Image (tube, rainbow, N blue to C red; front, side, top):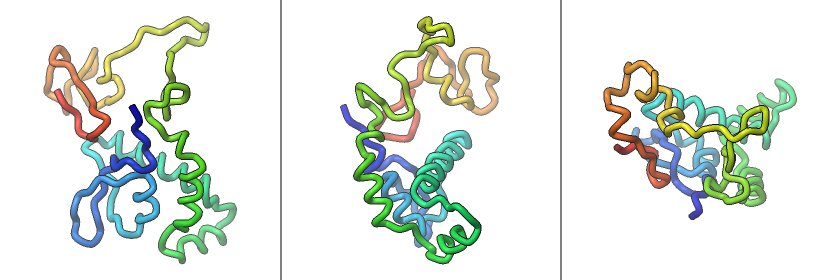
Length: 159
């Protein structure tokens, strides 16, 4: 199975022109950033993670090394699509969520500092706002016994 974050639509965005919610790919989100009013998710933790990922890609491609360079980028009012397309085309293989060798932002095995295999945790451990284990039930009023699942084809959580 392949889920490549570069071209698969998965980032929830609010469009500037008509305030419409739309999912965009990494490529679309950055190239069309000037058409987006907000990148958002129901979870503030997901929203900040998306911002950090997008910012890391921008820093990788544009720097800037100085305030003057930053000012030049700001005056352009949009990112250089040619440069971003070149980066995404060259690095696309590194953004596959289900790659067998190097899944994006994941590891195929979890080991402790001593090299011992670590017991896995439920998916609710990834979403701190969800009830699970000894997390306080502040925002999520579901039961852990119902189980949680995440679909790669949707940013929405399902029971």
